[in-house]
Image 1 (cartoon, rainbow, N blue to C red):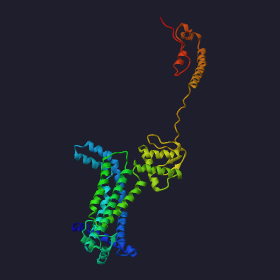
Image 2 (cartoon, helix red, strand yellow; image 1 turned 60 degrees about the vertical axis):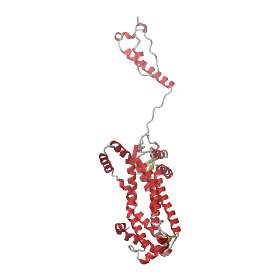
Image 3 (cartoon, rainbow, N blue to C red; image 1 turned 90 degrees about the vertical axis):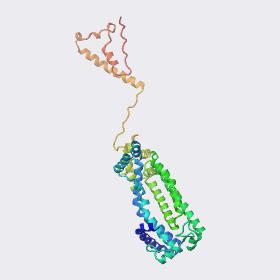
Image 4 (cartoon, rainbow, N blue to C red; image 1 turned 30 degrees about the vertical axis):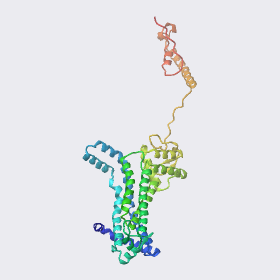
Length: 425
């Protein structure tokens, strides 16, 4: 404990100061020695820390999605250089550098919280042992030792003996019941948060080892919280339960409004967005415009849900623009092609020739044949009689006339048939 205290002494004083400031506010409402005043001070500390970590949370989401996108490429590298670990590592680092991703970015929020967590643990341990720490003086220390949350002191632990618990003014039963309930809630919230991520916000079209790792963590993390939780003071359990609930709510908001492409959450989001946009005739919020802009920019790389969204807009006489806006127009009658290319405003739809019936084809052929006869006779009448070829003799004298042959070779399906040539002996 002394080692931990020395490592996190730079953050212990600020953490204790923040708790004391919140306690001064809540103490005027609930009383300075109540568990509500001290418990809400810890909850407010968590909320303040998590608000400051929102930029890191956004970076974590982007990094996680980038890692999901890179999983197929990473698997190819592993298979290609499975016998050369050094070359495999070099190719992996090259891939991370080219795409601008960092595998450690997904751990940033947890790593950033660690100093505050251990500082709070050290503050509560000082309260349990009766030692002043940071800005907590003797009067605040006495007040904190009197504070109970549902009968359990802030500094009490699940494994504390009866002597330690009685010194804090409580019973072992109360402490263990309260801590057990809080440990179960803490582990359950962690499991639900991870399960929500796996079932709703993962691209189901790509099966990668990353998904198997996340599925494993879904069961490992709750067990870790349950094991470590029996060694945490009640105040630390309040801290960790609050941060788990915050994470769960924050993730639910992200999944609902900015889901992973190809996931079930995206299908539900685009269905809601389609109803909203077709009803109002435009995309209204900045988030909606960002989603529409990203879908339009993908072009033929859109997934199934995104193509359905674009086609639903075109059927409603709406066109998604490159800047994320949705406008009405005549070009919206075009439906997106199978390769995912968007409908181009002002482009005319290509018409296929109408298929003719058999009688129409025969009449057209006959008409063409009738028009060609006068031209042939006129041409022949202009020539001198002595210049006429011998082929103009009656059919019994040799080969058929060239006029009939030209009709047979004109490409028409139906028409005058060529007379049969006499057999030559």
